[in-house]
Image (cartoon, rainbow, N blue to C red):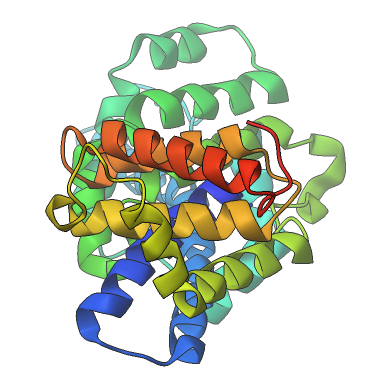
Length: 309
């Protein structure tokens, strides 16, 4: 599940904190990086659990209404279609999910106002109304309802970010990326696999884990060399006027260029230019792009990097 985009984001954040704190132990920042990535996976599980807990809140609301109707002798029948959603039943029974949730004690049960608000937004939607009006529904219909609910309600609810920030400092800025993995998981669910449906693994393979650790170690161990390369290419921008975050971004980009021969130069530059747009000043992406392009061309011409532009 943890991809290289997320790894780059985490390494940028941790390298920045590393220099700000004055911590000179590489091993400690490597450990913190793995912990941070592990917490991203925890958020993935937590957001899957959110759909289950919204359904549990719906069950509670429907049961309360049915009890009030019984006391008031009202014969109105309330549909249980949303509560009995086959996709959610399969998700709630998922062995991998249940084991992780129980071990890490993850639950939204104390966020009742949040669950009620999300449930209300889902039930007010056109796709919910269309779903409830159908004569009958299939598993695909049940799964598609939650795909739409997640994409249109949970992904767009800014107030969820506020709740997540209070629960873990590691989840700042993670939700947008993790949301895409949750959507992919919903689409992949197959009723034939029952409780043994595979969720996304924390790392696709050991290669991505090694990429994360090697990237941040090389960036720290060779920082003086990378800074010298940057300073030599700041003809139009004085080095001491660059934003500190810009320097961090370029330091990591150079570590990636010079350490991972299989990653094209253009991919590395584009990735860190995009990060500059998110994490630095309004014009930083221009500086980062120009300086990295200049450094890369020089390294290639001097045969210090065997890559093509």
